[in-house]
Structures are given as C-alpha cells and as structure tokens.
Length: 385
Ligand code: PLP
Image 1 (tube, rainbow, N blue to C red):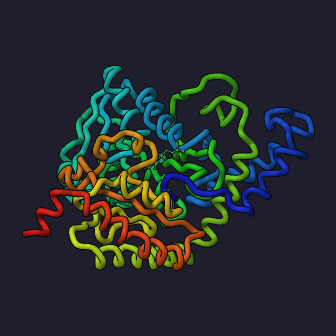
Image 2 (image 1 turned 180 degrees about the horizontal axis):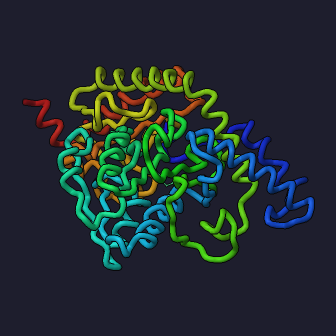
Image 3 (image 1 turned 45 degrees about the vertical axis):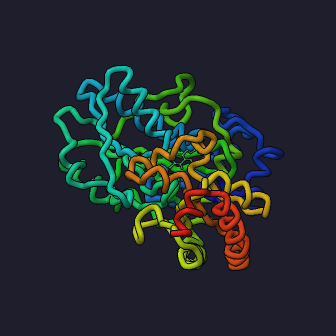
C-alpha cells in the first residue's frame, strides 16, 4: 500500500522490454540495420507515450526519471527565457524535484514565489493570480500531490498563465495512470511523467514540451531527443514506458473506480474504528488511490514499523523525505499542527491490491494503535478525562 513510492513492473511491460536487452540491442543513432531496429522501437514508444497524454510524438523528450524531467522543464525554461524574465511561480507543496530545483534557481539569481495552500492542501487561487509579475517566465504546479493525493486545478491555472503569456509546467508523476491526462485539454506547455510510478521500471521518464516551446538542455552532448537531451537512449526502459502508458490508458476507466472503492473502504474503516484520527488532504479532489490519515498521540514512524512486522508496506510521507524525522513539509505547508502531522500515515493503493488487503489492514491496525497509544501519557491523561 505504498504505490506512490513506486510500483512493480507489469509482466506485459517486462515482456515488451526484454527483446531490447537481448536481440535488439542496437544504438538507435546507428545507421545500420541493428540501429534502425532499435530506432523503430524508440519511435513506437514515443507514439505510445504521446497518445497517453494527447501529444504529438515530436513533443516527447525521454529522460531518466521524473526528477530529471522536472529539472529539465524548470531549468530548461528558466535558462532559455532568462532574458525575458527571472521570476518563477510554484506552490509550497511541490515534490523536492520541483522545490529544490526552484531553490537552486534562487541561489543563482532567479526569484521564486511559493503560492500557499489552505488547510485542505488546495492552492489559493487569489494568491496564485496575485503572484504574477511582469518578469514571470514559468509556472510549475503539480497535477496531483504525492502525500495527500490532492488534485490541483491545473486547467484553470494554466489558462490564467496563458492569459498572462507565461509558460506552464505540471508535474503529473502522481496523476499519470490514476486520472486521464490530455495536454491539449489541460492547456499546459510542459508535463512530467515517471516510469516507475506507472508499472514500468525505474530509470525512465518523459517530458512533454509543447511544439514551439524551446528548452535549454541540461545534458550536453549528441543530438539525441532532437537536441533536447543528449545521451544514448535507454531503449529498453523507454519501450517499457511506452507499453506501460498504453496499458494504463486501456485500463484506467476500470482501475480508477476499483481503487476508489478500495481506498474509500480503507479510509472509512479507519475513520470509523478510531477516535482522534483526521484525514489530511481534500475530501473529494483527490486521486483515487491515496489516503493520508493522522493518528493523534502516536508517531507515524512507529505505526509504520509495526505494520511492517505484519507485512504491510505504507508510508509516513514521501519516500524521498521519509528518512528525515522532521515533520512533512507538505503537511507543514498545510498548517497541520505538529501533533497531527507526527502521526500521519499515507496509504497509496495499486492495481494488485485487493479487498482482502484492505480487510487485513483494518484487522491488524487497531491493536497496533491501541498498543502505541497505551504508551502515550498524553493519551492516557486525555482518556482519564
Ligand atoms: N514528482 C512527484 C510528484 C513524485 O511523487 C516523484 C516521486 O516520488 C517525483 C516527481 C520524482 O520522480 P522520480 O522518482 O522518477 O525521479
């Protein structure tokens, strides 16, 4: 139940990529037949990824991961259009791949406005509109938040950016495969996805760059990816990503409602079974698989360890920050008080989860919470009245 951290590689995806590691091992830049064969696979994957998000294949740049795509989008635009202006708008709840990239740009002379969110983790649209300046060159706002699952009003936000003639990037890593994505409908200029969140392997990602938008490249070298990202392509990984995109699009209309049902059963089960628990995030505008719940008077980390002993994998924040014991920056940005964020647990379901899994969590969780709370003097005092 930690699919927002990563997902297993689907059997069909593994089958699709295998021949690229064995029989078709060419370099797609080579002119001979071995290279041309690899190039054909590359082209097909590019079309699959483009179809997944309603783009043209020429608008897809393959990268090594979601973080690289975010870096390429933000630094690439900031560098390319730096003469036009040096101001960027983002939010206070972005993934570190966006947040730290913005922090870096601040250290080299760019100005960044971090638009705040409310206590449900939704962006403040008035503050957003107010944050635009004459020198704003880029907005980067995630499509779905990795910790709460909140879905942001990207279409409206991109429309406003367009009115202001500002380019718009969205990190759709946690939205891909969970809700439909269409770059034309959304009106975005750049969009990030990552392979390992949609049942392809780690080490591959993609960035959509709308035709006509120029980006400075981060990796200099050969002319791969139309000069936008040098380096011999990870053809097997890219073929896997293409297949994963095709499969995701084919099953999303069945999978999303199924995950929604399972997630709601889990969420309702927890909120009904326990006192002193609270949902973190928006009650409805959320991807169907994610639930972030705080258990007061206990540490999220302690619940995780006990769940782990019962064979349940969950998370107390994003995998990228869960090694630090500091409260989650996302929950802090939502003004969640420390006593609430300390006991936060994130469940993120995936396509192999079953109703039995949910029942199992609902069975093993109560004794864990009871035991941990029995160790809390604060909780005991509260219970004693
Ligand atoms: N953006 C979001 C919203 C994420 O959740 C993640 C990973 O958790 C990333 C970007 C980074 O993706 P990757 O792990 O492929 O670098």
